[in-house]
Image 1 (cartoon, one colour):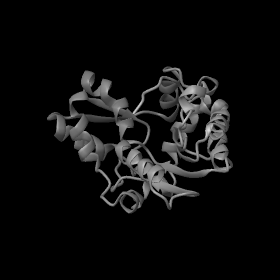
Image 2 (cartoon, helix red, strand yellow):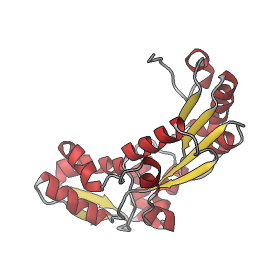
Image 3 (cartoon, one colour):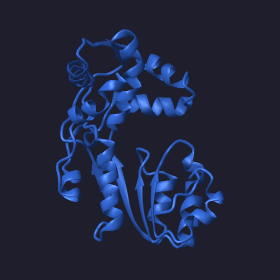
Length: 224
């Protein structure tokens, strides 16, 4: 194995790192929408013949570029990451409080399960042209997640409701654009069925059960 340095946000610098690469994984992150199609074009031109992509919550320019690339592709439509819970860490450590605008359920998925599905799709045949909805094995509200966290860290954690606008302002204060903040908070305000309903895709693709939120908390309890 050879490690090379580079960033998918600067595809023009990936000429050498892409040489000899036949399979590529892409996670759509902030800023990639603008350069992602170029990344896909350069990768295919360099010889990549199979791509997995974790979507950004919708089918945008990068996802479209992958689907239209002419090579084998698999789109991983992951729902909320369990690792989003880490955004609560500071307020839990400082105050024992979690502040959110909504207490709706979410079928959170462990990030390691997303990686496991990506690995199977990249290495094994039979996944080309498919879109996989990825969830965990249970749908939990923030209050239910807080209860699991409380038991794991051995102290009470309170839930405090904030307004929709306060949640947007909190995100923009961290440098998130207003449009992105409205999208994220709006997703929590009106979750669709795919984000709240448990799907067994992780098990079907990997051959083992999806990891639970309790397992995730056990791995990260020291951060709270």
